[in-house]
View 1 (cartoon, one colour):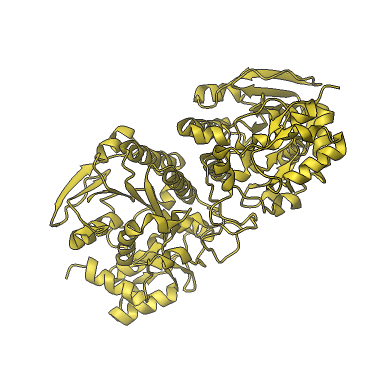
View 2 (cartoon, rainbow over the protein chains, first blue to last red):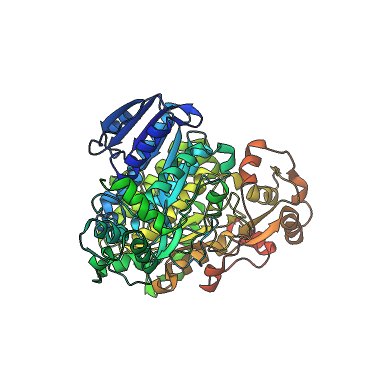
Length: 320
Length: 320
């Protein structure tokens, strides 16, 4: 198995690489090589197989083609311009999330080997006046450009798969929390920072109230699901290769209570509560009553409690 | 009102132009100029206002920009590579139906005037394992590249509208029957030719059986709906500017009976019944239990009988 992770410097890419290193196999075969590609050189990981680190820019077809070696078996396409950033810079969002996506699919097609392409879509594809709950059969009416680009990415993935150019599978990620590292430009950033920063003794702002509820998944479960996602037999995917990855709905109150249960009362005191109108506008269009039936049937899993998410963060991401 | 029809040489473009010429107004204002643009020079029409005829290729951004004059108020984007053709030539389908569409949207955006863009999508966006009936809230899981490209076109139209770059509205056309003129490369071609040719004393082949049923609209109602579609107040469109245009489900038997009722028993005898496997594969994925609630609420209309469709063809399209 020769695996490529595009977006290999990102949170999900790095955690996925470390999980693959720990497993050593994918789709029942030993991993022989893993390439982490990104616009910045990815951090190194320890692995029992060869790991390559590559600077690549998928908006350039030549760079995309260089990143995707002819013997690549599985491509994880995780790279994206995230929500608030794509909303702020319309052209750059389309450049990466639409044209970059197309460059990757075209190169994968050119290989002629039907490589597996695992694409991370997003629950930002949901929105508009479509009635909740959202099932696998609900209309996608995204209300941000990022969601639009992800919905287009799904359509392309399905068409390239149907044509036999690739073996694609797409997973709409719930909001990932607790994300380690620095804040990114996602509108959902605070949904991690209000735990991550206080757990390290720093203040963080929550721009919504205690009853705000949303659909979450821990990074650990996310990468476990991405491994399973690559392993789903093609014939089990049916005529739509894209689906929502399981998650759980929590209120901010439940999440803070979970942090307090795991780490005591001090962290919660470091949260400030200033509204941020520019984020409120984006969040207003988000949806949370989501029923990921197909993914659940195919064996993908949500977290069982937000206390788990807090523990995973402490175990996986904080220096001991 | 300065109106542009991209795809102005096509069946729908020509009929729409003649309807606009007859009306003389759109959106409550007199039409001052109409431009018919297409890859071939469009046929001339009689009109009480200035009409321009332009060769334009939307796959070339410069040509697309030349076609769309700065003072254009309403752009009808009807041009497309149709179903069987887009299935046969994957790259050309994407070139026109995705990249050409983007070129038009980008030029419309560059005008800075939020022009009305009326886009013809297709019921080919429906398919897959999504349960019937299809409502405005059903997932789009097209099973041909043409449908994929139309679904992407809808997402882009909505995002460009939401951003305030255009005032877009998209209508998924039922299968248009009876189409005049020569057969095109749509898989649905026989759904017109088995009436058009026999009504003119020529044979035509029907590759499906009498009970095949599908979702139809006459060309006359289609262009009436496209005029209404441009006139729907923006605020009535809600958060999804795309919807299915009303149509009616008929079986081949009902349609032939309608032809016989209007034109006597002779035409039906000219129909031959040879199966065509390459068309059967495309038709298999099509859906017909479609409920276009939103468009109906906004005043768009289906035909009342297929006899009407036959009469419209005789009145509008056959030389007297």
